[in-house]
Image (spheres, rainbow, N blue to C red):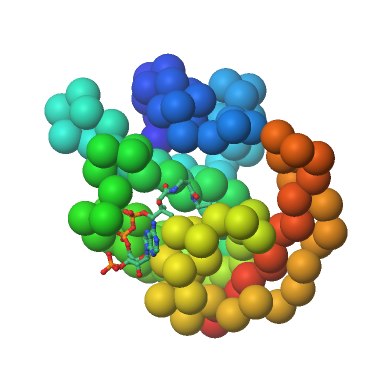
Length: 140
Ligand SMILES: CC(C)(COP(=O)(O)OP(=O)(O)OC[C@H]1O[C@@H](n2cnc3c(N)ncnc32)[C@H](O)[C@@H]1OP(=O)(O)O)[C@@H](O)C(=O)NCCC(=O)NCCS
């Protein structure tokens, strides 16, 4: 992901999430040197992801596939790409947080052998209050 991709990514983010990342979240991530990726064919953005490295661990901050491109293996492909990139930086474990009500996300992560290691109560804003985060981890 480059600065020139951020317009398309922000537009996608707003269409995917009730509580989207802002433009500033993406540009700050790029400035901070986070590992940020997009999948696209010509100008058709289909998926993107951002992860942060901290010593020998990585935190998956965002993994998103545009609705019209889902269930075609793109989320899986991008995740496998992130595993390789993380291992290339010497990471041993990947952590992530996912909304307790996000069945698609949890199904994807369980399929890739992420295990639930904790919960953060009321971590996320939700349309009807707050929602728990499930914390997951996978050895790399
Ligand atoms: C979660 C998400 C990234 C999955 O992307 P995707 O490209 O559709 O995923 P894949 O096609 O690689 O699916 C791989 C497997 O994950 C599981 N899965 C994916 N979507 C699912 C769904 N809606 N319901 C149940 N299982 C699902 C299935 O096991 C699937 O395998 P199958 O299609 O052979 O059954 C996508 O739905 C998305 O962007 N959702 C909104 C953003 C989001 O929730 N991101 C994760 C937040 S942490």
